[in-house]
Length: 184
Image (cartoon, rainbow, N blue to C red):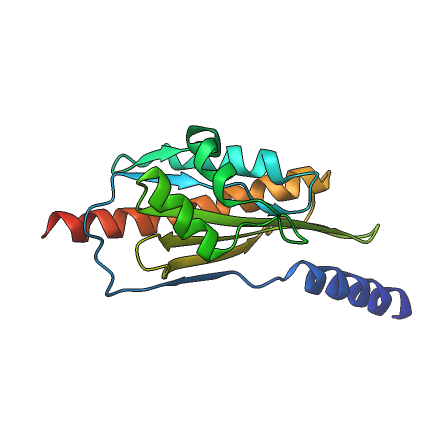
């Protein structure tokens, strides 16, 4: 009886460690004037994963057909003019994103943050992405996803899965926005 109880307790603790919340919040009454291009700005967070997270997130969005998705390199001059000093986590602020959008004539941007967790027993990857309207500075949608993996081989694998899950959320948001804009 003692061995079974200990095994059940260990498994319960392990599964509880994997149960991280996922969020998708969006403004339902937002109708963009006409977004054509959306830039994925450089992700902030764990420097081991930020460049890859930015590129992979942008690549995942290519599945949608309503907007042209650009990587940061497409508007690097505008980014360099606005972002002089990165904050402590390397992220771009909403006001900086607005200024970048105005300089590059981009009406919407994605801001992202990637982190990971590994305590030697469990690991996870986390991605948070916000879709920002650069005219108003308003957050139109935000998604936070953990990898959701019960078992993983590496933090890298966990981060990649979290990026894919977050991108799926944002593809749904973009489809909703596109259908609302077409009704105008």
